[in-house]
Length: 396
Figure 1 (cartoon, rainbow, N blue to C red):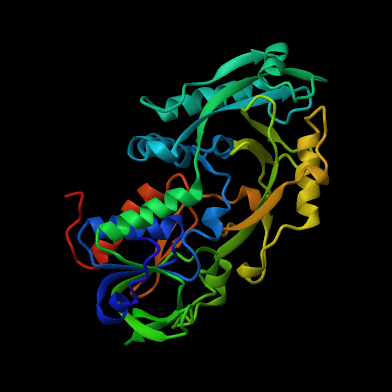
Figure 2: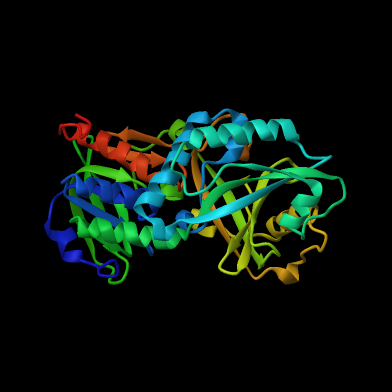
């Protein structure tokens, strides 16, 4: 059903909710809205989950590094969702063991890491698909992952998190939204918002395959278009400069490299700038990523640059006794995070907290968030949509 394009429904029906953007947030919002009985349309200008949501680190995780910034609520929410997604979609959840080696030059020492991992386990609670952290001596750490350098290695830890296939999850969520009654069409682009008396009342859409244009009327429009959130639509009234500045795009790059020796994932810190990055087993290969740099310009032009490759290879090779070269790079991909801007913070320092705001009357916009917590955020989004439609809360 996800490959069928029921354009006629879009042309002939009126909807409670029109969701623009078929990434992980748009898909979950469409599904959650449909199962509550709302009449939902979901459109995506390309293939389902083909932009940011397909360029993730392929993880369902709490985000251990966010504890360093005291984002305890974000970590707790993500860890609880890791458990819920394992319950709801166990075929898409792959338990992983992450190694966290500690060297004499490590930015964070063993005591702080031990404290952070203890808290990570406590926040996760019971019935998780992975077990808690373990401590290792230097020799034991090298036995866990022989590819690591042993020079100045003090020891380390392991902890549990999960991997997933981001594209397959989105396809299943979209399919479930259709089963729940949503009219979902990919290769349909939202060109312009429809506005009546200052209120958004729908959107002008175009069929990317035929070029046909038509209007869709909806009581609420949800803008979940990710990096295009302030760019794709001719928004009226026009966003102010302050509104444009409220969104920050950061680029994340991953490299596909040969498999590691152990099959474990590894969390490391770049010696050049202190950023956390991962080595993650992925379909018989290793994902190395990610970067976190500010991006300006057309989101469609995001690309992996030679400097991105050099940064990641250099960061990894500081820890590997047999260095990778550009000849080892089997593939690359880049994506853009859409975040609420925080003036004065670095790209990697901006919070991943999700926001759902009515930036224009009748249009609600999804900003930020994490792949792992998209489902529970979508539930909160639908509560706000139902309130705007003057429908009873599902919590009552």
